[in-house]
Image (cartoon, rainbow, N blue to C red; front, side):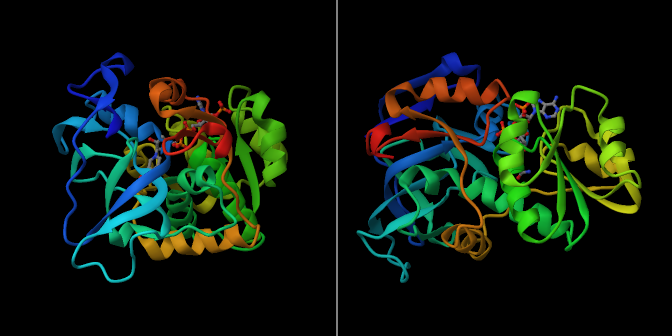
Amino acid sequence: MKAIFYRRFGDADVMEYGDLPEPKMGPSSVLVRVKAAAVNPLDWKAREGLYDSLMDAVFPVVPGIDFSGVVERVGFGVRDLAPGDEVMGCVPNDEYLSRGTVAELTSAPARCVIRKPSVMSWAEAAAFPLVGLSAYQSVSHLAVRDGEVLLVHGAAGGVGSMAVQYATHLGARVIGTASEHNHEFLRSLGAEPIDYRRGLAESVAALAPGGVDAVLDASGKRTLRAVAPLLKQGGRLASVADPAVRSAGGTYVFVRPIAGDLQKMVTLAERGTMRSQISAVYPLEKAVEAFRESQAGHARGKIVVAVGCAPSEM
Ligand SMILES: NC(=O)c1ccc[n+]([C@@H]2O[C@H](COP(=O)([O-])OP(=O)(O)OC[C@H]3O[C@@H](n4cnc5c(N)ncnc54)[C@H](OP(=O)(O)O)[C@@H]3O)[C@@H](O)[C@H]2O)c1
């Protein structure tokens, strides 16, 4: 099968496009013929070896966590899915790094796979799982309520743009940080934009003089020190991007691939409450460029790789 892969840690130049054997499939997994895969910052961090002390890498490593596609075969322990089902989901890489989704075939644990709703395109479905789960689990952890003010730092990115939509759906007022060129985009999602490069504290104070009820850091970039003081007394703080949040009294949310959580967010998407934000679609053979773009750190929503169909058919 055709795939993107790397045989050693390094920058984007270590990535190759070529042929690999089909992945093996465990008894509780499904083999999926991939239509689209999404790119996440976790991919380049893993490729650069930043998680090498946490998990073993089995080279060649195929990057990619999210996918949409069609079930080709199911493991003998799988009852709820069958060949031909149109699905979406993720391949968690929290224990070891090996076979991801930027390939013609991927093997995914059935517990991380749900049916793709017909209203979602292949690209929208691939763009959804990791950031949808991250947004759902972090906003839920913060227990954001109707009428509260949530500050989302890095609001135009994959996680941030989902968190803005979900918190707005819950009735929160959302202030989102982004570069100036993403401000109109943030307004379209329901957030009040501010520029993180220009006096963050003053901008937040102008919009929420008493401070904010909760902060979600979806950016990292060592900005926790800047956003933590913007909380009201007793306010809640969480980060998906920086484990150091714990020393600032907050919680580091590490995404858990729970199909039930993903299904809740996808149900909102079916009702038109949430949608995937896709900034670019690359063909599989040019996917290395997609990883370079993601690593540049200014993606608006998601970058998607078209695998089993042309970018124009996404
Ligand atoms: N813990 C977990 O399980 C988990 C899950 C998913 C993601 N993550 C992590 O969460 C982070 C965000 O992921 P993502 O997929 O949303 O990334 P992304 O799509 O690349 O978005 C990152 C956003 O950060 C903004 N940004 C760049 N520089 C910034 C700065 N100096 N200050 C504030 N914002 C800045 C960019 O906005 P502008 O273009 O407007 O500047 C961009 O939209 C990454 O570090 C990722 O690895 C962790």
